[in-house]
Image (cartoon, rainbow, N blue to C red; front, side, top):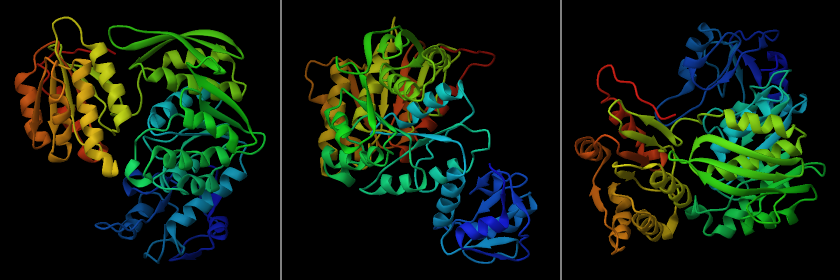
Length: 469
């Protein structure tokens, strides 16, 4: 973090120092919302939830090394008292960013944001000091907390911008305005909130609208709703995709037996061949977006390619492939799910399965799809059947339409089981799977299906150590 005297923090937030807070003390450590993550020099933010009130942990946070707490009332420990902790966080982040030399690279989209964020972090980090979000820190709390991690040395700040309604991204851009704005796609995620893909596009395009005139919009040429966003900014645009008009054009995509992609790129800075170590063809578009963003910032193409090819893993629970000692492969992609990301994961699954192993897809509910939820779940189930998944396990009552969709594909030779919960699903897969099978686990984050993936891996025979990368 860029060092900030507590007195200046009070001025920025229109707050008052209470309970012995030292105006000359300097916030130099991370700003945190979890008292267990306090370090020397931290500022501890007291959030009030339904079950836990952060103000109760202020004293222990200060004892652990925090300079002060940030809260809406006195705590008995040194505290910066403000009217609204979330607004205060935003003000601190905006002030520190404005005083820095950082370029901001922002990314949004219905799917792929966090994976692309990880690729951007690798690409820009190979060129200069870079800060990127932990996991999916992309909302009104996560974004300013990420901004506040910058230092005087940071040259690129990568940020995710999420939206659950019109105006959300515009608000986030008021905290951290992007210099480079990437829009990956407009899919079906959060369709319940927006009502239509056009509504989603209206919200996602707020990132592009926030660009300064000398900024760059990085847009998916293969998605008509995204490509049309170039009319929403006076900034220049760079496009990526397979379309022949794309500035960064994807060509000749191939995948190996582990669904790792090899492909060519034609770019304004020259051509390149890239071999990713990540699993899933869908990472090709994410990588092309990262290339376009890096080229917009004048990062050398050779640096970009080398960085992309060195990435071996992404944030947790995103196409995380592990091989058990007996050869069972588990793909944990359970952090989140929408129709587009589930289809991409299913395609990767059937691409990875080989030899005498069977493909298993353990799928749970996809939340926030509104009135079209049952139809979209049925479509995904039918897609799993058409792709030839051998064993389909549907978890939970809310996902029942997936099973119905799979059963509607009469030519499918596989099998579907609908189970009530993750515990039953875990027992079923653990009992019936066999070495060389490949098990994909995917659902909305609220379902925590990664616990099933972890449970399967815990059955590794003693002394065994497998891994496919």
